[in-house]
Amino acid sequence: MHLARAIHFDESDQRIFFNPARTGEWAISGGFEFSNWGDGDLTGKARQAFANGWLGVETFGRVTFVAVTAIEEAELATLEQALAKHFVDLYGAPSLEAALPVARDELRHMIELCDEHDPNTLLTVIRELSDTGVREQFSAIKPAEAELDQFAVHAVPDE
Image (tube, rainbow, N blue to C red; front, side):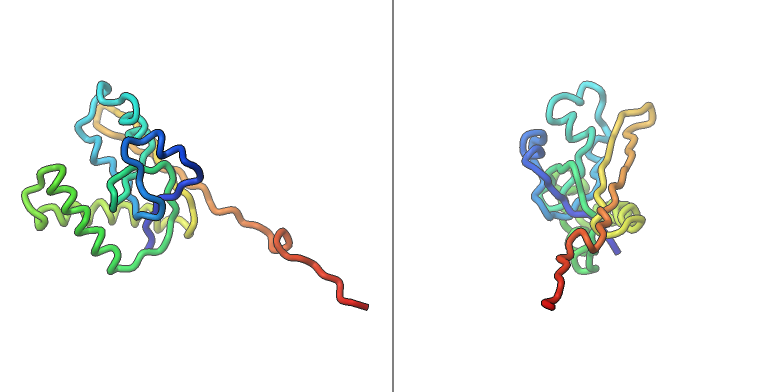
């Protein structure tokens, strides 16, 4: 089973998101955050988060790139609880029990997306508003497949 972790190649996320995700934290699409948004909400850093930010499930910050990696059931259970608590605290879900199935669905959606890819594959998201709500498109960048001789040092034995 795979999920995605936030990854940074430079400091740009620190400048473009109000609350950047921490490198290495588990991440999901998080498109639900924008379900009630309209064109007027798409300005500045909020627009950047909408346009291409993944949601970190620990800091609830945003990140541009995520990398596919394996996750254990125990880690997943912890994330389910954290996300359910986020739904209660921020979105007014009536209880953790009521929010838990929705949190599981969000995480399962991300697991299904990640399980289509090899470990270390980078994922990006692009969002747009449509007449029916938020539309998301996902792209994958496969890990570079280097030839062994690019790294090997060839020595000639002493004659």
